[in-house]
Image (tube, rainbow, N blue to C red):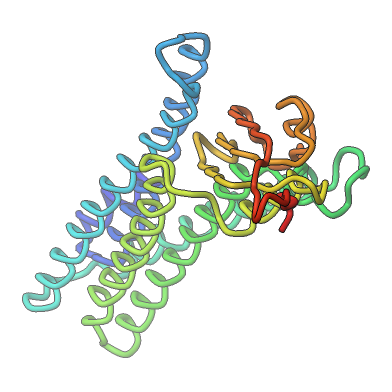
Length: 288
């Protein structure tokens, strides 16, 4: 359907239809790059040259995909503005037929993916209801569902533009919808760049994750976290470096066992030191 919309958009002169096809193409390209990244990362999963595993390959692929999406958006915007300044004749009836078929295809795909996503979310044991969404929801499937839903929306934009051009003579609305489509692709591209860059640049995890780690490790009032770094090394997996001072220090394994399983911290380095704080020759508890 993507190929048909791009081809007919060029042939029939509809920028809205072309933008819809390119929008579908951008998502297909992004998901294709992600699929290749999964294959490549699994192929290299046992390669010890990767210090924290191959999770960042997916983030690198996502960032490359986002750059490609930005280029798509820029091309769509430039071409739409050109069509707005120098309008060309549009074969409205033919373009409208293709756009309607595109809406049906995207709408049907969104319905199938949406029902499958909800089915997966409801499967499995319910031992930890508070974390059920994280454990049982397929985020990749959810992402695919949202992409196809966005494609259905741009198909609807194309139909609105073509119908108004046919009955109200507002031919200018067709390239305007092309601009709207380019903004949608560009916005998604920027969001994908931001999320993938947080992994590639080893940025600190969210304050919520940091607080959960700190509270779990400091379960004993005699223990205090003196230094804490938690960062993502792949999709929903983390590494952590934790320094602990304690009045009654335990082995690193004890503190590691306190970390919540649902955070998926797969690489942990823990340093433990005995608190030796003194004031006027009186030992001061570490918790103070």
